[in-house]
Amino acid sequence: MQHNLNLPWLKPLKKSFPDAEIFLVGGMVRDVLLRRPSKDIDLVVRGVPMPKLISFLKREGTVDVVGKTFGVIKFGYKNAPQIDIALPRTEIAGGSGAYRDVAVHFDHAMPIEADLGRRDFTINAMALNLATGAITDPFGGRADIRAKIIRAVGKPADRFAEDNTRLLRALRFACQLNFAIEPKTATAIKKLLPKLVEGHVPNELIGRELVKSLVANPVRCMDLWNATGAFKFVAPELLKMHKCPQPKNYHNEGDVWEHTVLALKNLHGAPYQKFLKKLPPIFGAPKKPSPTQYVATLLHDVAKPLTIQTPKKDGVDRIRFTGHDTEGAKVARRIAERLRLSSVEGVNIDTELLVWLVEHHLLAVQADVREMKETTIEKYFLRDLERGRELLTMLFGDGSATIPSNTKDKKRHLDDVLVRIRRLIKMRGGRQQLPPPIIDGTEIMTALKLSPGPKIGELLNAVREAQLSGAIKTKLQARAFLKKIEPSKK
Image (tube, rainbow, N blue to C red):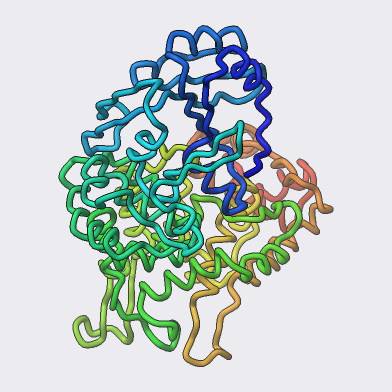
């Protein structure tokens, strides 16, 4: 089997140690077989004792021996990113998935098959000999790739007991690769998931697997994490969305869970690409939504079950969820902080943006967009273009999954917002940035002989609204406008 790795130091290594065997292992072997892009280069070197291997690598590049006691060296060749180079090893993890909760035995003479036997799933338990191109596959990983199956190496219960994080890694791989989980492996996962809440797995590792599953394939994530019972132990708040009814005249798509799944589906598929074409160019057009956006869409209606009011129970005119946006923001913060989502490795989750998106996902529903002040449009969408784009995407996801019983009644809140945004952009001549305010608070206090206080902020907003609407363009006009609405003190 051929590979395209550019590792110039391999030939000198082989020349220095003719009996050495150098293997590519882990996820990259799997990805090469699947023809997927991969950046995770992990190598195992047999036949070279650790001190001699370190000595050689130091001559070729930079060596970090922090992981030496685990049989792993981090090696950097010139300007290339660091890669992991290990000796064959066996390990017994304590169950938590934490780096240091592992008992390791490594030996340069150990057969590669023994090293592969410690790995989690068959599709990750293959080794590619970089000299010969031969693949060592003692557990049938290639067959499982062809069958699109996630299967634990050996007895599933043993593999998961070694590292409980693997329970969620199986779900994540199933989402990323769109594979099924082999029945015995799936049964073990369902049985052992309670380990997640017994303090066996750090919360940030749980959060990592959830976010990576969601970003890779949100609909598959919702289905699989729900079917296995993982949400019960990771984010039980989500389960209350099941069978939480919605008024059919607005939400004929189903209950809150079904609405959320549909919003995620649209965010991940062709409807999102169609939405991007509507965005004014100043916002940019990222090919994929941000990870924060996926989590915000997952959680935007999480508080509906907590705030539901029904005609029968509460005497309201229809099913209502008053305050679910603000309450949902609180729930979103609790989940994000509990799972330490801002610390997820390799995925940028902005907790403050997440909470803000959930809190404001009803912005275009709670008021008539056509009557909104120019300063409101500026504040939420144009003052910070990245944040504005995220909110527009939030409005798209929620709105695209809101299907009234009479489709003629479908509201076009997002379109109304975009009309207002385009109008403001046109008024400023298509410039990237909004024009700076004409006047500041100090000038207002001087002109009107006012003391500092909330009134100054109100007047600043009034002037800014007049400026953005085109009513005033100069400082002189601003002062005249202010004296008209707030006569100065004598």
